[in-house]
Length: 442
Image 1 (tube, rainbow, N blue to C red):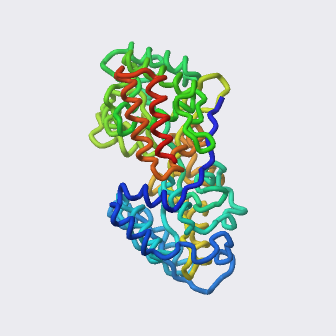
Image 2: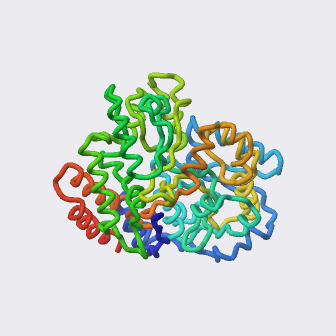
């Protein structure tokens, strides 16, 4: 049974500002609420500016990548080629990634930003709540974006972002360690997976069979295992953590913890470092793991040993679960050049040659069927396997829809940690989590 995933629920402007207050400072947010002009100076659903050419051929593309020394060369060639071929002028204001969302909200509320903006998909609900982003559905028509990728840019029935790259956090393995343990086939079910972990532990040499996330900061990964056991986590705007399926998932997860089949006190950085030293057989990461595990790796060619696994399922025939990850581009309405901006956004996200050039430079997978089936992509064994085994069935994080998602996750993680160390039972701990998480939703 694949876990159902809820549609986003309504979020008020007041709740958005209240949530941002945790990061921006209450005084700042109060100033935004009291002084900012409306963020909906026109009908963002009309789409007229995207389909009617106003003759303006200059627009701004706001990103974090163009402000980073390492990332700028990955994006600049796409912009240069597009400007050369079309004659448009693309300005490139940048905001630091660590403070991007807060600064973007301030600028949008102040009417200081219009045009395309790069977004982490976790931020789409915030922009959707503000009502400032154009509905890009007209641009998506006739383009072969994958259903999974296109869904990442959708909020409450509106296509407020087009996918730029789409991936997921999935299960990765070291092929050498798996072979040495005699594991030749990927396990399909949870029982098969647990048996494989036992085999890996029995192989000795101090290898951690599965470096699952067990530090509070990244215990959110447990949500994917709750999905695997059949819990929706969120349903119709209400937290369902504590249902029978999530309790079953945590009971299983704690068993792995207690028997040493998963590592203790591990986060993503720890797992990457241990994987690089070939002391971890399996862990969860994104497709760019090849470059992330390489620093200080025991074997300079560690990336060649990476294999992507479908996440095991509770019952044979279920859909493997994974958490979606990616970047999208939205267009803030209200400024000139919307038509030119729309043409650019469609091109940079869907043109196969551009997408494949970007993939070869940056390692970010494309989002259209044409590019994903092109030999320039499929010849990359690991990236291609990751796309078909992990990304293809990825789902959006069920808690991203809530402005206080960070606090909600922290609340869940605290209770999961208490369960793992034996301070409470899965049933009691998740019941407490549900009650506290729901208070942060409403």
